[in-house]
Length: 334
Image (cartoon, rainbow, N blue to C red; front, side, top):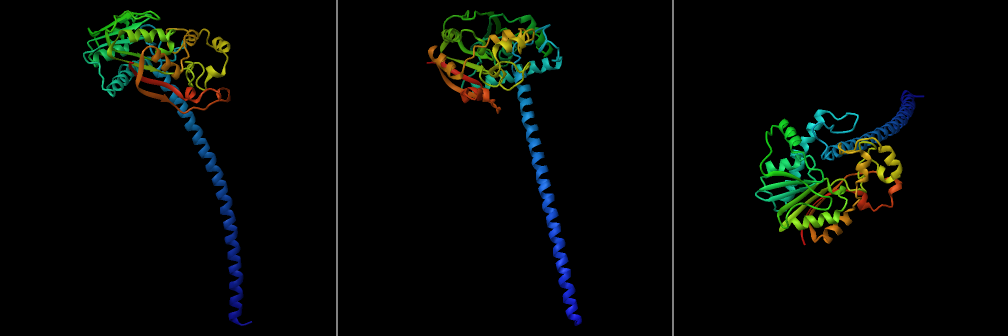
């Protein structure tokens, strides 16, 4: 064989060996790619699971903070009986209600072209009075009366307020005891009534709405906030004892009441079982029907919602009830 022929033969076999090596490398890369893809998929799934859990924890924390309404009282723990809520938590709670809740009320009515400056205002369900104090000092109403079936303790409120640098309650703020169906105020005497995280506990909502309508002036308005609505994820007020996942809709009342016996509710002043039994279980549509029956109509509304996993036990409950966790609305005389 000529030298050129031998060179061609060697190149042919060398090329074949090289192609074989490339094929083996491609197979190796394909195997590694599949392994990496599987690992990446697992990592993505893990991250997604962590995000879901983080979202749930964030929601639970936010909701626990938002709904310790009336829980802060002198000498009363601001949380469960195990003392897990620290003084810092109580201080954060005061800040969230004095600033955040009051801000929401003021901004919500301002967006409707209303304000409370120089107006007569009433709060239905004043509790510890922190929101009332904020509105009285920051909104400058002519008067603000906080009504509750248990009269707000003004002395306890003043002691709490002193820790925030407020040395005396404003002259335009006062508190009175109401009935479950009555408000001790004159007809057409109030420009704005508001109620915050209270109305889901009102035992006779139609009677109370008619009372609110009675005391409102013809140009007055009702700002009503409910969180949480009963059929939403945390509507049973059980997040401190059961977390999320619709426990009030997936567990029989008898079992829930047995679980709650001897525990403190999200309102630290009352037992957890009593708090659960106080819920009137209003739906959003029922609330609207009651407003219309009380000669009021909704003029502005903001729905409160969140992403939830829906267990099979509640799949027949209307989605609007499951997914709408709360509402802020402005109602005016019809």
